[in-house]
Length: 424
Image (cartoon, rainbow, N blue to C red):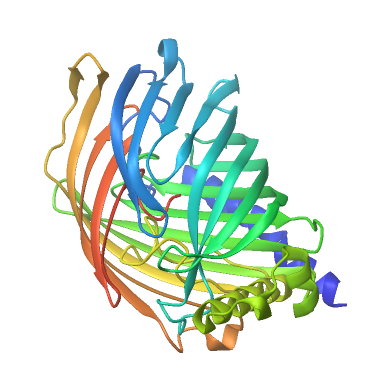
């Protein structure tokens, strides 16, 4: 009975009917905001330039970015990234390969990270101690996959399916001072994958740079059971309303509901988990490092029992906190952002290394609140706030260059990345 109920919760059939109903209704009524411009641009742009990145909890450095948007006046984008600094590696992707123009297209991508350190907070939920974390040193992180999208009604309705696979080798676990707590012999290898199904209803005035209207994106991320990990499905419902402010500025309001539904628990015996990881916490002399080791194992056990919803922290949500700062089986998030568009233009620019069309220079002022827990009834018992300012440049090819500075209970964090927040 439990598994059957869980499957119903993970893949509700009603949402597809709802998407279709809303979209057809939108076409038949005059209250839906008209699109400001064509939704499939063919204006070719290219860029080859260094781009600094800063991701709280992951690191900073310099990337070499190269890409062609709307290559050869098509709808297809091609990009490559070389990462240096705290993360080293490369990525290559091709998006919007149109099999049926403007209705059926594919994205494919591959990344290979040779070096990286990712922060893992030892406790789940909102009351975790910010000083209780370990840094996971990884190598040979490879990920690849693709996505198929069906698009209808001028991108007002999109249905998509994707498949992604990854492999990672964990080399060591370090404490907050960078000292090695444990070193995995020959590297501990993790393999996994996700199947993603979803749909989006977009009743806004523009797909890439909305200023008025409503957007709802529902997705199910199914993680099949591999080894001693759990089998679970992450279901996200992401809703954003765009309210026009004056002639060209916008107030964006976002709400995320994210829940993990476990079909089969993973390994939950602490001793067995420690043995699988190759960790002998009792052999660690330092009391603090030993506690970090024990808490890390507890974290793995909790994830195997409850699954993990979308986390909070980093460049996308609760931007004052480090990437992955708060995690649990259930997440709720509310955000508001005033986007003050300083320009509204169509200005071609060609400076040898970059050719595109600048459409908007924007300042943003935002405030966010979020909570996460392993039990639904614990949500909003504790929460965190994040607020700050940002600057963006939006181009006709759909690229958004973004920098944000945010403050919260644990200090100030700066993020420099691509795309709008809440969409990643």
